[in-house]
Length: 268
Image (cartoon, rainbow, N blue to C red; front, top):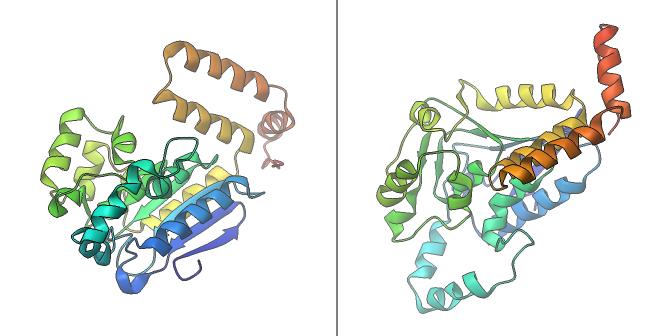
């Protein structure tokens, strides 16, 4: 796995990096497996309070490995395409490739994607799996699948939902056009433009790691529910999450630290 994805832990922040630099971190079977394995491990790893996802080298992720497209054009590709529907799926409904993106949304703590160079097709959908996306001004982004006669199928439709207007998602999907950081922010597909997205992402992750970890996790559960739950379910969940937090050790510590004008010391 270490030839595709590395993880370094520091003060509650998991610094996750795609390291297939010779291929601009393109997605091959080994990269899919490494992303899923890493995400699943971070779901339950003790002490993780925030995650930063980035790519080493010239790009965040160039998308699907070119070898996969050649395979699709062959008879073998046609046979393997049937597995997209019949394959085993996660509890959330994802197949293996979709889970490489969705697993970051399922991690119980905030995930920040630091995106530079390019994030095309599957690489763009991978970035969408994060809670936040910090991008460079000159980044190149695209829902590029139509170039290869395809549609986005790595959870892109689920992850774009709620970020952009319906007509914007349609235009990007139908054209595959490339757009930059400033436009991505205006459309709602990026959070902010940064000169150094990785440095800014790590700084914010460290700030988040210093908050009540149980409140942060509760907030992510509510925000995930917000996109799909009905009003009654969301209102009830708010009450349940707040009821569990009020008077808990970490919440009391947050209050006392503020009153005593000191840094809080939270327990995981």
